[in-house]
Length: 150
Length: 215
Image 1 (cartoon, rainbow over the protein chains, first blue to last red):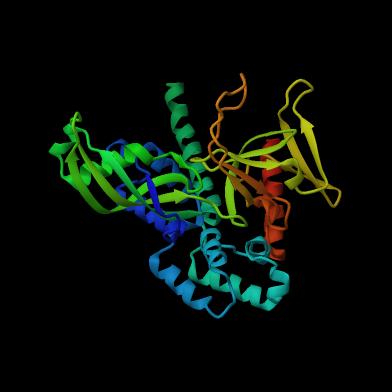
Image 2: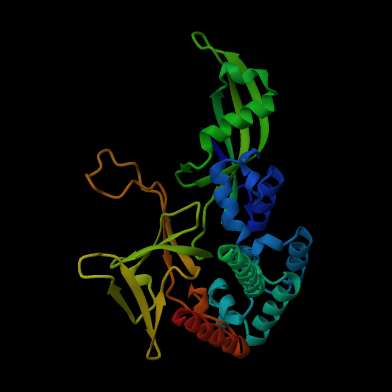
């Protein structure tokens, strides 16, 4: 084995997820049929729970365009796309020494750009899902009671 | 987090594979060879991205298979130092935390990279396992597996394969990631609900959780 290029380009989480999806990975139970290895499914399962799950190529391109004016390193932009920080405290660890490089206004602007270009992560819609799940559960229990009585 | 790495490899293609189209056959063979394996200094191989070229196909004397030289790209999992990632807690003991990404489990957050002042409470006097607490503002925040944990990559090492392993030691890990959660915005995501209004929501959510726990 010969390593020709150790670093032939970085990939965002979205790109890896997109690649796995194109290969046939999905959440449905028929996953044994797809030509995707077990280890690839583990990566897929991790990535669908991150912010990458509903990003698109267009939204990432738009984000890259709009943060061009800020003096950010490539790795920082990559990390911003992968983490989708929704407030300043989340952006703090991602950007190195950001309190000296950026003012609070600029950071708020970056957060705004992130929020505008990338849709909110599924966590924010989760409580509703949980409620509906509980509802179905309770309705299921109600449905079960009469049967027990009879 | 993920990188492409261009690699050249010479491999024999077993005869039963020859009935299939060459590209497909070599792709399968490469997956068998590299998938879910760690290559030192390159990281953990996630997938075969594409095949650039296939050359050769000689059958060497005494061999029952043609040998090809293939140039291809692999998707490697290789976090860079300073990167922020999320993971789940796998275990925690007096030495620190062990985190898991689901596909990669060898992430350690040692004692010195935990937010200070901190405190460790063991489950019982006998067990080494327990929970770490961050004592901030006279409140203690637990680090438990109820939440995903954000951490910063401190170091990535590729230990060489030991010739002899001591008995009852941990299984050998070819790639070790050291993380840190000692910074603003790091640690369990519920610690940092964000702006004022979000903070209120976070408190409400916490109250709700507590109420649910009481029930």
